[in-house]
Every structure is written in C-alpha cells, then in structure tokens.
Length: 150
Image (cartoon, rainbow, N blue to C red; front, top):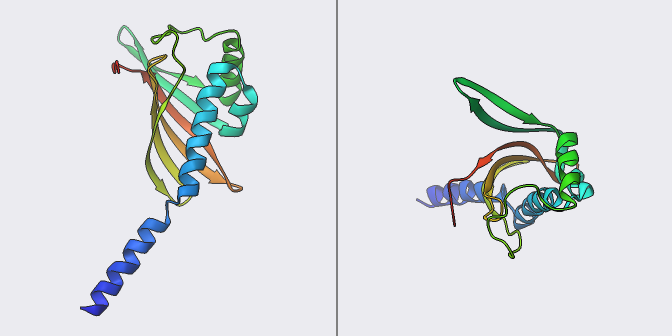
C-alpha cells in the first residue's frame, strides 16, 4: 500500500510539474501582447509575442468553395499598422476597453494551447504556443468570428 501511495505521489508531481505559474503568466502575456499589439498597431509587441514562422488561418467559404485565409507574422504586422489609427472592425462594445478572455487549455513541456475571445470585436482565436530560448511565442492561430454575444 505504501508503494502504491508513493507511486501515485510521484505520478501526480510529474503531471503538475509541467505547468508552472510562471509559464501560465508568460503565456498570458504573449497572448495579450499579440491581441493588444494588433488592436493598437504596436508591431513591437506582436514581434515579441509571435514566432517569425507564424501560421494564422481562418477557414471560409465562397459558395461551394472552401478555402483558408492565411496570414504570416509580417502580414499580421501590416494589418496591425492599419489599426494604429483605429481598428477597422465594428466595435461591438463602444466606449469600453478591449478586454480579451484568455483560457489556457493545456501546457505540456514547452508547448501550450489556449483560446481567446473578446467582446469588443467579436472574434476568437485558438492558439498554439511554444517555448524556445526561455520565451513563449505563438506559432499557430486558428481564428473566426464568434456567435458568442457576451
């Protein structure tokens, strides 16, 4: 019985060691820099938060043709520069600040998954992040407009 309890304690400690509070805070910071950098035209924040190899996609359809709208980090930065004078999307909460909801779905070693949603512009992102050189960066984004209203 003592061996079983000891083995259970070891397994639980290994499971919990993969996600530290420091990692969670760093992941949330990367995601916040990505979203707020885009909304304010702050390319430096985007470049810190997003891998140079970013693949950002949205699946769309035109009639019967289904296609992917792809965006790289450089295109994301160009899009953000246009937002420096104001975001070119409908503001669904006029007069209120952009406050994204961030939910970390999983952290496994140096990889993580998260979801964001914001009421202001009504879109959500599923994000994959990776930790390299001690820093968390977003490497993949799947996004779309949300049906969620609050």
